Length: 178
Length: 196
Image (cartoon, rainbow over all chains, first blue to last red; front, side, top):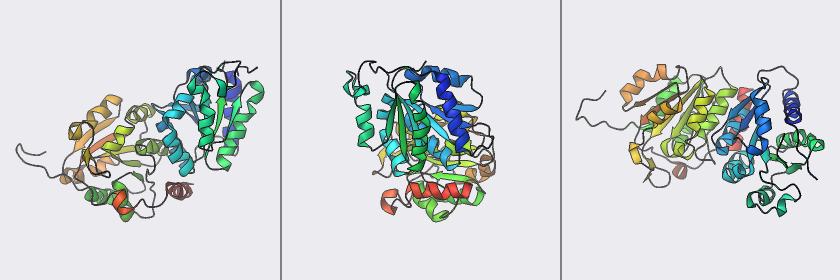
């Protein structure tokens, strides 16, 4: 059965990723979080509010987050985009234009809001949960599901993958973070 | 200012861009849609990246660049139809408060590339009011080229975010008549190398 992941583990993963992306150089901020607030990841967003090493920028739309991520990448700044599945649907054309055709590495943390604990998301009764992974497959976006604390390593793995393949990659947050 | 009753000739986008090219120094420039072909001719190999392939994204692309390069001026050449596609970016930009961002809005009231259909609200949409309401540090409109020449030096140095609504006619070329130019991915790589 899937488990919720504590926000502290996720923030530690973010910091480690950014340190590595910068080759260990001390910087302020360490990295950027571009967020369109997601209920599913609200404990992470709350923790980020108190976090000084990371700078969180709340965006009005996921389209904006994609384009801002491109600007940060051009300027050499690492970032992570935190959205919800509904936001993925809303911004798929910008993801295509920026991250796929534009070859900008963008790593997404995507919350599967309303995902049932006892079901595979592809069998969910909620269409926005059910179609998220097939949509990513359609656009050949590599993705993995974080189903508990043991899966936190996937964040670094898929962040690196987005950079290596110069495109999008995503970790889906299976249950609401805590 | 224009005397009452006088008809103001809209500024030519190409003339505006020529003035900016001469004044921008080391600023990063982000053209989109109908400013892209003319800017390519004026500044073919410099610190620029066109917002191409995701209409409406120029302002956000500019924000990301401004945040990543706080010591360098970033100038966005936005369109009115384009900005309407991501209007929320006004609030996002205002919230991030990039001091080095100049957001130029080329306002012609139409979707020129697709055949000059009116944008929603046409020329009456007041982007200056919207930018002020969103929280930009400054926002104003410029109607004629003489005023632009006078204000340009200040405009490109003033603390941002600032939006300047430029009242223009139609450009000579569009991405459809002039072609799309270098792929966005190539432009990203080129600018990334120059900024490294």
